[in-house]
Length: 220
Image (cartoon, rainbow, N blue to C red; front, side, top):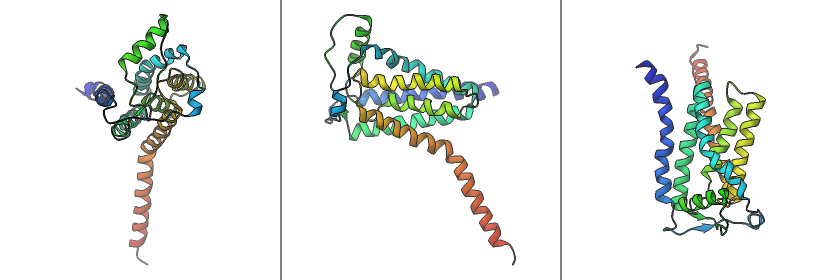
């Protein structure tokens, strides 16, 4: 029973991600109207089908990193997972009230990568773009690895390469625009830093207030 509580149940919390994803499916349409945030800069970003590889690698990357944190830094695991789930929930609220869309290029050819992109396009409607959850979640892993107990320069470098390639992939396969990516990074920064430092800040504020009250209560 103790093993169940200390290992299995915390690990099962990752199921919150696919459970929350059901809201993504419900909101992934233009029934409420959709805006375009494309800029002239986006129009100069080329379509590069090879970037579908890091884009699809995202699925393994996110769950793999969370499992790594679960094994080697349990506290960081909970903080990162909480940041991600809250971030997803915030994104869904934004999608409901501020739906956006991204124009996609016509896909031609029958190569392996082309067919994978064609499948992604058919399975994922061009909505729910701002902020990008792909970017949000990838950036959270980039930040979190810097605080991991088992961090090394090589591990930080590897996670950074994987994370930023995934972020860039969202632009190069035209799933997102630059503003979507910036919003995902900003949201990830705010959430992670707030959650990671919340307990220390709370303890500091509590101790400071306690010290002040104790000092005021001392006889003069």
